[in-house]
Length: 255
Ligand code: PGA
Image: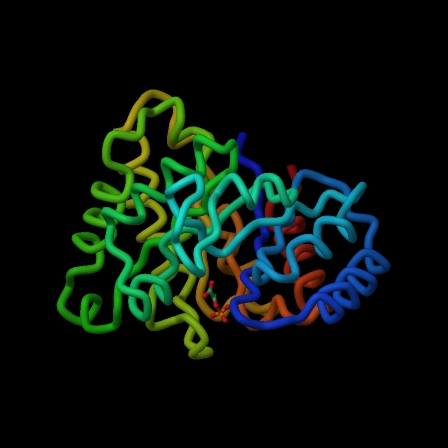
């Protein structure tokens, strides 16, 4: 019922030329058929190159962030509608690096989610606890709060078009992946939260795991019934790595 999704978050890596070379290698490694949805989220400056390269392939392109106003005097910001016009189908919102380094709050996350929805983009909402939250036994409380305030007043039928990514902050870029059991535990909690938002929401919203995902651990992580794929940083900069993770996800969730 839910598609498996394998999404690359390139963060602040790759020029247009490097993005172009990535797609040449990735698409040569195809054919990419089957139910797994592939998404690449490049920096803004490489989006148009990626859209052109991915044309006719099953790879969707996404932004890594967007602003909530449609246009205006907001130096440095990029509107959701601009991403859409550039050919994006997705946008990551509320990544922990945005929350931690750029002071994003659940309130701004909520505004950005609404802007993305208005422009017809599929939001990939990121949530996750820090190591001190986890050590203090506050994981569920933190994730609950990010979901509750981030998704404030978003109706169930709109929520059905979302993707959620659980990314424990302590696992991002650290090489320290959550165990499949730790991931499934929080994914099950997120699934239960989604179920409470309206009939059928939990059945259709993919919940991705993110944090040091590699070709070697994707299949074990996706053994958890509520782990529907991954949001990948470092390992998705290499087209062979991204392809191997996509293949692992397809094996874990063949239909
Ligand atoms: P990582 O990053 O795969 O490099 O840990 C994941 C993310 O931040 O989305």
